Image 1 (cartoon, rainbow, N blue to C red):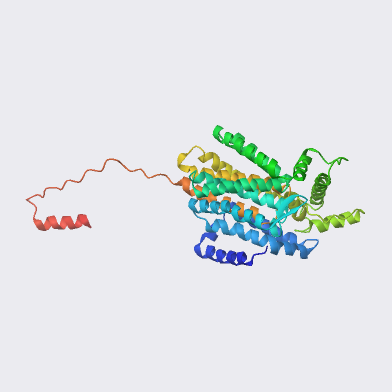
Image 2: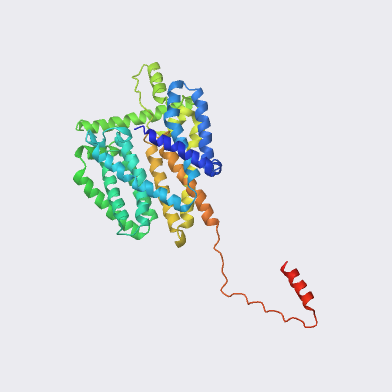
Length: 420
């Protein structure tokens, strides 16, 4: 849904960031500079687009609000405590999103989705839920075991994972499995046992609640692209979807190589591909690339693709570096946990972006802006050295005995001189 109140608050926040002085510091940070370069190339490729109207629409409706996000977050967050609060907000954002999936529940071919809006696609719904789960885990790690925040977030995580499985999103399944594997090998023995228990609970809940058609859809992950006669209608649809995605991946890569500098224009991949298919006498598919990386490369050229991947690698490098640096420091537990949550959120985006169209949406700019703000705050925090307080106080100076041979006038003059 296009919430105009959000855009108004964004403009008010931008004015506050400029007046507070944080905006000037933020625009010099690496992530903001890279996104600014990406935006400049976006404008250039819009001018050279094969369909300028479609590119201008993509610029105004999608990218400008996303670019504002990456400008605002580093401008307004200036401390570790504010980073913590931002992570809490993202963690508790699972609650209204899950509520929306219950109030506006809908299904297509047995796959859960919302009735309308940006959560109306099962793959996008799974992606949005998985992006927020690492921050809900951060809330659990930061609170007491029996607090209402811990219980609420734990129930939200279980419900979100179950809802992700019920969407039938194979990219969501691959993302969940990858995250479990990473956490299993990185975590300690106690964390590994918790993961095994959590996986068992999720499998049991999925077996009891997920429809048979959805489970058969997941089985097509190992069936390749061949259609058998004994497959159900949903399985055939899943296999055909995999075949179409592979075709779109190849076509987007070909368009990127054919237009390596400026691409075909932002947001016009489907139109450009339909034109190419019409020239070859094929059926015009009119589908998006379903791969954020090749979508950027085909629509904006290889330079934009390199900038985008560079931002993603830089964010991943900084969060992993902070994670390793603070992992064994008991005084930096909050920083360590935030770095772990941000790293896992980046992993979720990296995998889901390979299967979806999130090139110009707000998710990655928000995440990258938060990583940049977190990095700046951590650098300030780690650069501070604890003040050393001596245990022994200096001895009090002993007052000198006045010389009786010196007149009081001279003594007073010397005293005034010493005081001056």
